[in-house]
Length: 473
Image (cartoon, rainbow, N blue to C red; front, side, top):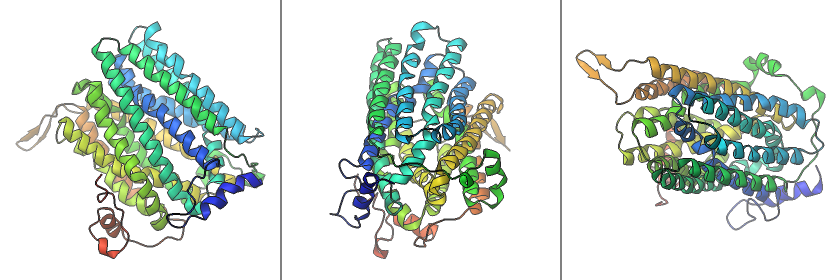
């Protein structure tokens, strides 16, 4: 690794208490990684967040929404296998990643123009799904290279804090972009020019991704080495799964993703089609999740460094399992905001821990391949979960009777949400015990960790502090 690549590591490793060097010194690769992530998140907030509403605007059916939410990511995950092959043939990981990001940005233009050249309906949805697939393929092809490079640049001692801080800032950018884009769409929809609104927000997504590519080009670029004995195929990865702690972790995350995807694509359908919420109401409910994530992500990172990622996955996994069933209680918009606030709190810890676990569990030479294999397996589970949820929405009963009591849900999708909770609980019960923490961390029971989070036992030492600050279903 060249001298310049080591400089950020020395600067950040010196930080052990407040007042020392910042996690991302000016001019360092880590600062570039934060700024890249912030612009990427603007694209996500203004663009990806509204792809499902865009499909609904184009008159997609519930099943088509499921396809839009899962087919493109599936192609994107498969493209990660190609990305590993290409990365090993490029002289520069940095150049490869930045080029892929720029190509991804350009896909937003034809997506934005779909309603101007095609009538709403199945043909428009087919074109949209194909274009969104191109968007995911161009972005995900460089995913393994980015995971490999960022893993080399971020010191292991501060990984949880760095990604916690980065995720906090990117979450804030997603939140702001989502609110601004939603307000724009709401104004345009009220003046019967929703297509123009989508054109505007998708062009913002295009520009934001180009700026993200600019900062990707400022990463340090240490040489990449992949010894032949560290290379293995997808099928070899599967064959070793029984003896691999990381493979068992991938099974857990994939099973959880199946349960999440069973209901995930259909919350937007429920809000916009069944509850007939405005774009502004939809945005406020969705933004509550992002707001909570960016407010809490930094603190989850400190907990991950101290108590380990497995402990966070356990506590937060059970926390996110109950989210779908909470949607059955009420359709009141204020209540839905509260649900999303809680969901963002739990998802912040789960997503941080699941992303960080790979960096701890996998050697640098194997990181790109393992990231690609994990993405493929998770995408297959997501695809299967979403299709199962979409099919269930059309075949579940219109009412549920238990003895003399009969429940008639206000939408068939509420039954899908109920089943999603059951699937998540089964995944947690069966798969959590299969893998273990890979770092030496301070032991703590799940119960005590929960107490720390909600500050019920402040006398025992440092606490999480979220509720003391005042301020993906």
